[in-house]
Length: 235
Image 1 (cartoon, rainbow, N blue to C red):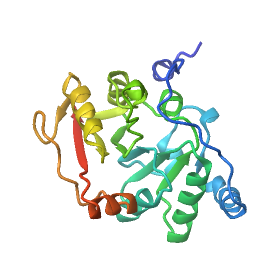
Image 2: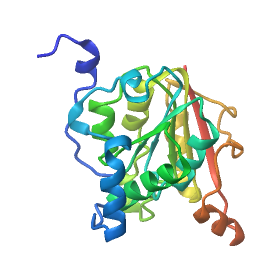
Image 3: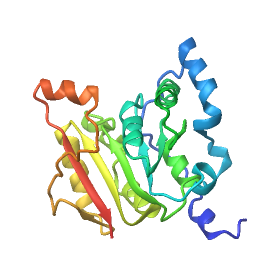
Image 4: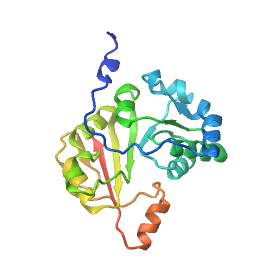
């Protein structure tokens, strides 16, 4: 057994309900080439355990963690626009990971790294407690059907785990285009005693300028769909 209390607190727990569907991880030839060419620089491995940001990025900085970045375009844009920060993306689908690394390499963005793993396991094994400045969760699967609502990633236990890895005053930023899920997020977060709502009790936050509009979001806006941002700060 480890004598390191941080490692003990980061010990993984058995997961019973997954918040995502494991789609095919098959990549095109081009995606596989991009993955293989860029993984040695951008990739992080679950089995390597607790991260040292100094070793990974070569400096101390504000750490931004994003879960479920899709094809990675907005995360790469954020990293490019905030060179003073360092970004860690977590995504279970290899094609998206390959795309993010390719985009980062093409743009010369070096302040980003990526896990191709389940976020719950990554947070349990690899992210030190009290170390993250911002945790981002943008457009997670809303699990529309009522019988599937239990699969939504935003639950009390998830919010508590995020609080564990956030620095004091660190923020948990969510966004969704599904109003019932926004209401669910609000209900979960307002019940938390570990956070303050940055916008005020029971209030949504306007989209910050630094959160890029995704193509998905732009299309939704053209169709008249709403988007809800929620930002909570750890007490």
